[in-house]
Image (cartoon, rainbow, N blue to C red; front, side):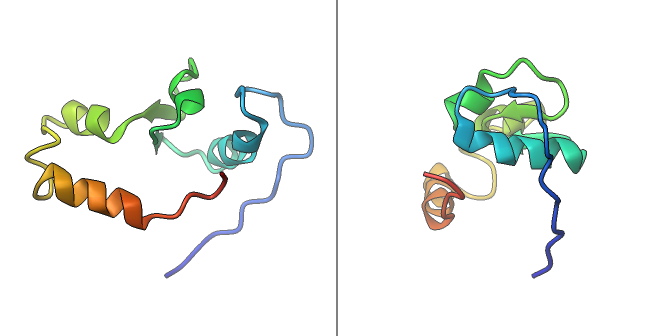
Length: 89
């Protein structure tokens, strides 16, 4: 597994309601991330085009797939979601 260390932004503009989410958004902006897949309502309510925030279902739909048909079943996706630990709580 590889990773890239993204330096924190010293004086970032507050763009998201939940202060705990701001470092994640800052890193995504600095890293020029195209998309954030999330279920977090604070991210989903952002009016940004880059990075674009959307749910997994919205992403799959934009790719012409349905959640039930993508990578097996919806239960497999739900199991995968449960196995990923969140960065912040």
